[in-house]
Image (cartoon, rainbow, N blue to C red; front, side, top):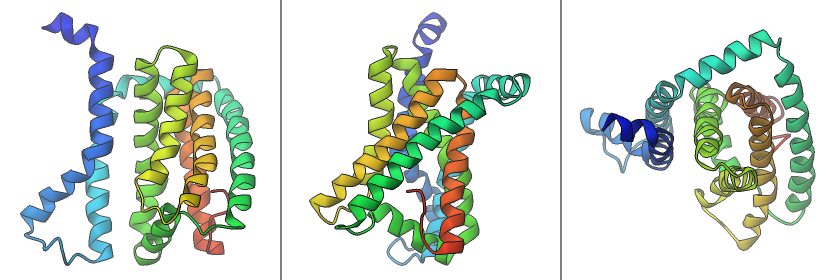
Length: 234
């Protein structure tokens, strides 16, 4: 049994990581049941607390699963004095430029994606909780799932690159309400950023690099929303 687990450890972790990403929100039903909440009458702040709770649980499980890789990555960043972060910044920058241009062009004849509109709402009602979720928990969870677990399973560079980047980008669209077929055009900017993070991790083989850059990316979006009232890079 130990031999089997060791041999297929990466595949088992991949299945667990993907399962947690798609079904981790069900963890919210634990406090809903415990506190006897009416799921049909939950305000947005309570929804945010429930979302933070489920994300925190998923975050903890994933960090425990990939703790060795995270610690190794942090040590590598320290030893190389942030060299991979500098390189990662330019991959991010290229992705962001493409993202901004495509977003602006799509925005000329289509409304903002539902994903962006829901973030605006949550930020307005409970900014601190939303910042924790978007700027910290979300990026780390997504990098461990779509970069770390995907790279462990998809050994072919091209397969990993497109599976990690495109699936990541597509989920930002399909997991939210789609108002029209034009909403699918937002696959371009979201997939672009996914591909940027995927290439970044493949290039330096340090999951903490893409984590840091993803946190940086989301944090800029949150700051721009709070100060300017809208996203500047997504």
